[in-house]
Image (cartoon, rainbow, N blue to C red; front, side, top):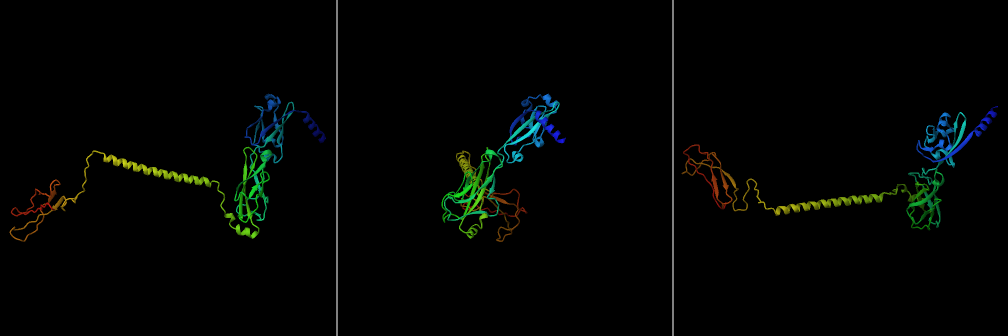
Length: 375
């Protein structure tokens, strides 16, 4: 009885399929992007979609596609990754049905997912092991065309996006090795000689055929030696070799540009200061203003024959009797100042204070002033 019911439902489903539509969209479309106008493509009325309670039916497909009954269109519900959905299976497509009730109607929908170049190649061999040493041995007796190793890489994309090509980007000796464009085989292009270095490093770039192209880089260490001990002795510090620096040239040019700029700037500043000082001296030289010399206090006339300063202070002493040879020195009653007149030739003028320096009116006073044109 159960088998009869299932057979009846299957026959009913096949007989009730009224049409089918196929769409093709790229993977990684944003959420809410338009897949297609299902109502227009199937010739359905928007009222029929609402009254028939149209819905999508098929397993997990509902996670990626949704039906908008208001507009009669199919939209992206979740971002679709072709590799996650189908893996290596091609073609990759979503299959589901749109079902409506009253009366029961069913339409088949197929959405094919086109691959996009969203994955870079992955290098499987040689394995990049970080600090540990992995090197391929090449005997010095190797002839032209000797197979050193093979770079193995894969791309999870499909179609032409997964087509890989191999190129030799850098090498210690580019005249010694070559890389097969399609197969990634590294071979010698000349005979190995004793002059070739033991340590050889090759950088191989793996590119896919997508638009835009994606790539991966792998370093291959090669030891040119006839015996394993020779390799160990030569490769002791191999892991400490400096990595290739692609930006070395850029840094050198940048440093040179900075140094040149600083040098030119300093040179311009020095020349500007020199020109400014030269102009200032020329302005002062051609100026008609009188030059007033400045004499500091107690300036000595070193150009003349005298040794006294322009201002000289001296004291007056007195005696009790001018007829006697002994004398008494009393306190200075005042201070006299000698001033030299620059216009005269050695003449000193005496200026006495108006205040009397005598304690007694009958005391004789002798004032001494030295007038000497030579002093």
